[in-house]
Length: 387
Image (tube, rainbow, N blue to C red; front, top):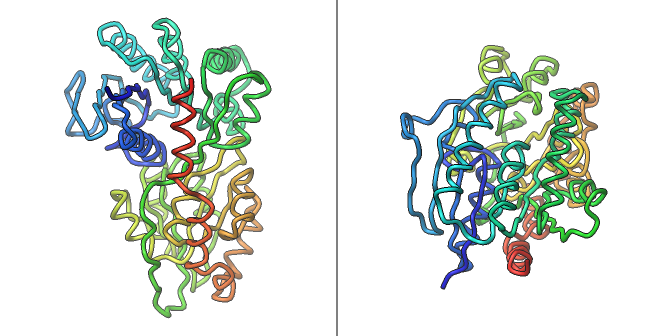
């Protein structure tokens, strides 16, 4: 009989982005090593805040897939910046999750994507109530990250979120973190818990490196969520590009319309692409840009692993542990987070000689050597089988 596990996540394909891709790779990987995987997620709505057309009007949706089954539950979707509106959206999915547990037989082990806090808390409560073995996957240190980004302020609401956070840590049987900083933070409260460092390493074959033309133009690319935390709109407003340098932007999110309306000559906006098509497009660029508007403790953008596996050197403008990884593995350049003067200086002086410091073939080789999905996944499955 195959092993069974339930994956609870707020993000899953056909939604695009790092979080859906990460959880899909996890589900697929578990299926490949003999697990029967049941994924429970909301009807797809991220990042637009609207239910995708193919699922519009549905209360729920279920489908059988190669690794098991996907059940998509109703929620009231929203991508509003208002935290109370967003909370109502999360509560709606939590209610659907409660009903799912009441009326559906579920496996003994459950893997919970922590963040949003309210979803993670609800899932952990249900896991405890139904006597499950709980694997908590912590990819962001909420509510601390919200405080650092200015989205949250200290007060009664923040204190409530902290209590939910600690409850989740306390009642988990295995805690999985995407960075050393995350695990270090959690160990301050739960020293005896088993931990596992699970980097967001993508699971695809490294493609042949594309040899670029001899054009003198240096093309920098950003691909991903266009939100407040990434700060792309602010960067586009404040940074000017020399004649031989251009910025190319792919993605969707709250700031997409403002970026598209800027109309700067050296900034090009293309909207959102499917992952495979995006990978093909990215190989035609010189440098991949990874920004955050502020340094967020615990954050290591998964774009580091994805871009460099494609052979793209990265311009890292996000601070923290991610910058240490970029420097240690010789994957590109690190500019201090939120230092717009330093970023402008880099843009002004970037040239072929700088690109030759991190040739594409070398960056890809370093990335493939340092970040091995198969090796990490084998260790991970051993950890979850032992709880």
